[in-house]
Length: 245
Image (cartoon, rainbow, N blue to C red; front, side):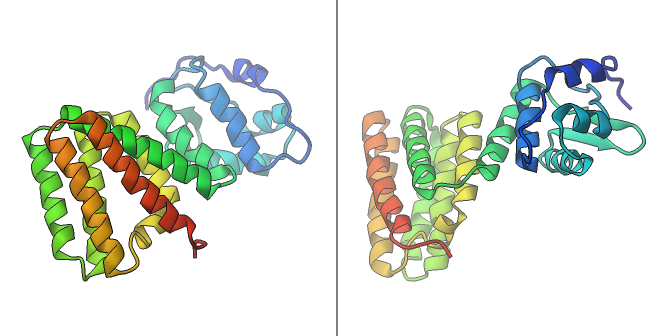
C-alpha cells in the first residue's frame, strides 16, 4: 500500500467550514472538490475520518458517506476499508472528473449545454483543420462514406455520425478539449438518439459533414470552423425543437 504524505486530517478539516443548514450531498461534494483541486493536498493524502468531516461541515455522517462514495465512483478518491479514504491524482488530473461531476450535479440547462457543445465542436474543427494527418483524414472519410451508405437506416447513420465527430476530435490533438466535449455529449445523450429523424434530415446532415470534411482536408481552419458552426446550428435547433424523452 503506497505511503501517504503524513496525517493531515486536522489541516484538511481546518480548510473546510460548516455548510448552510440542510445542504444536500452535492454541496458536500462541491466543498471537497474545491479543496482537492486547489493544489494544496497531495495525491495519496489520507482524508479525515467521516466523523471529523461531518463535524467540520456541520452535516450528518450519511451525507459525507454518500459524497465520498460518489467521489470514489468518479475516481477522485480511493476508499480503503480499514485504512481510510485517500485522494487520488494531482489537482490537474482531477479537473476532467470535477468538470463531469459539476455538470452532473448542477441543474442541467439543455440550451446552455447545446451552446457549450457547439463552441467546443467548432474549435475542434478548427484545430483538426490545422493538425489532421493522413490517418485522420482516412478515418473522417470512412465515417463519411458510412453515413452516405446508411441514409435510409437512421440508427446506422447516427453511429457513423458519431464516428465522424470522434475522428475529428482525435485529429484536434487536444485531450483536455476532447474530454470536455465527451462530458457534454454524455449529458446530451438524447442528441445521439435523435441525431436525425428522417431521410431528408439525414441528407442535410450528410451535406454539412461533407463540407466539414472538405475544409479539414484542405487545411482551411476558418472554413472548417464555419462549416461546423452551420452544422451545430442545425443540430441544436433539431434537439431543442422537442423535449427530451
